[in-house]
Image 1 (cartoon, one colour):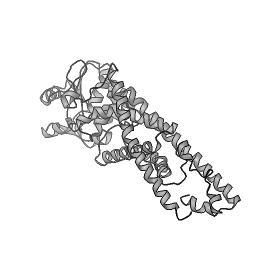
Image 2 (image 1 turned 90 degrees about the vertical axis):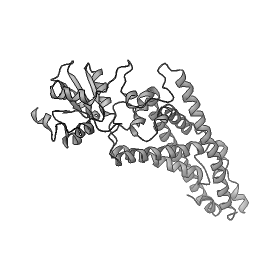
Image 3 (image 1 turned 120 degrees about the vertical axis):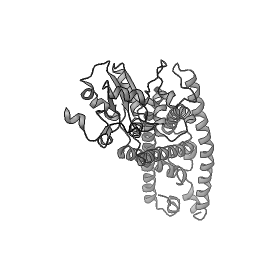
Image 4 (image 1 turned 180 degrees about the vertical axis):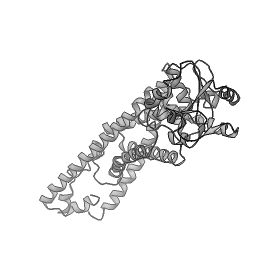
Length: 180
Length: 185
């Protein structure tokens, strides 16, 4: 009896593995069918293949483009007509940012939003930026600020990199907070 | 635990009762692991099912999948989580369910670690699609801790002779119902 145990155990494990294999496939198929069917019947259904290009991501539901060309951002900067918001983390902001930009890390936006925006009017031109083509922090921050009532919010895509590459003014440390 | 059967053959009646008791404890532990993991999966799926577009963005932010797969993943993954969670709780198709749960949790933990290592500043998108804290060591630890019940259930399903994880059909091989004692004598 004892001798036959290991064989039995291997058999059970094998049987379970075969079971697991078809069950895994069935689970995927079942979930996919369920998900796709329900998605089809939803009013705000998601396209099966989305447009995740820069243009696709930065166009709002109303067809408005959120991104701002560097030249335009530079013009607003030199004329001091726009407030820049750095959506990256506080550490990254402190190690270097666009001159005069304020730090508003997207992940702490709930705590820091009021402090960072209390002295600017709702129609002020705002430019948000982070770093990298695919960085979504600036985009998320821009959508948030729009929802909060700021009417003129734009995103400088890959802002920190393109700003440095154009050798535009940058600074280090916590300038905005020191002043405040 | 793993040599239950070999030991079983040599048990005195008193020890046998003890062994049956142990087996019952394991059954409870397994049930607890199933309910806990099932609850976690269902809870995790809820917000994602309600906000597929926001979840798609979270998936995009991870920068792991090619653009063409992002929406499909965002649509299907929450439902897969819901199905897995439900099946864990009701105890249906457990071998397959447990395998996918383990694979998913390992993938999630791996994706978190990968993006932490390359310094991406993104939301976790683990339980909530909105305003969730960034990925950090805590989110990795949390995901890794879910692997404890998952790996236990995996072991219990595939490598233990008496499978308390399994449903009635498999309970026939359970400790209590074994006619082994009679066979031995």
